[in-house]
Image 1 (cartoon, rainbow, N blue to C red):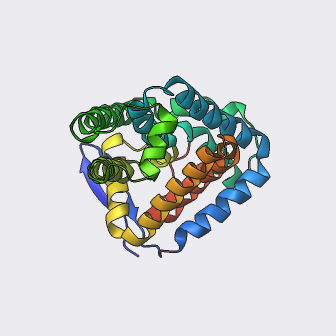
Image 2: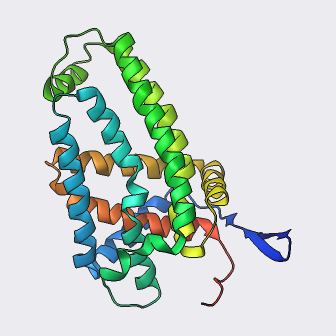
Length: 265
């Protein structure tokens, strides 16, 4: 196994993370480990699960009559998950170290590397705003049916009434989703666990995708599928499924990244 690359910056030694090769079936192991964390720490995990469910319900209610924004925000909900799941990462990290389950220490875990997490949030925010705007442009150019509410819009999607619109809309969405997934799949756990800077964390995340395309494609479809199931169960499924995904994302990071021991203190 290759060793981390040491780069000298002034008097400090900067260690760039190294990505490990994993099999296409690795996401199944991550989900099992996430389920184990959920069972071991159900109360703090469910707290975050209810937060996910509340946000999903709020998105659906507020944008019931603005379906174009609802679809974009639902995608954003999926892709902003790493920020909402920071507390879940901390639960898994603490359990890994043998600490007791507790909610309070996880609520302010973002302070551990607030500056870089803020930079990462700005990057994702810009991408998300461009995505939302592109979504509206696609609607204006290609959506030819009568403007319905959210329920009517989803019915039209299922009926394939506007195939050209569907191809363009989901094609554009796939491009943005791939970009955001690539830079975020392990970035936040890396920044929290090792105090890594935002740029190298995003580059490591992209490297994980490029080095393990099979596992990452499977993982992306599993995340998307579980999220859709959560929404289709009137948001109740989000209460359990999102914490499991959050815990599993921590184990994905631990499985994919090779790093030296964290400095003491």
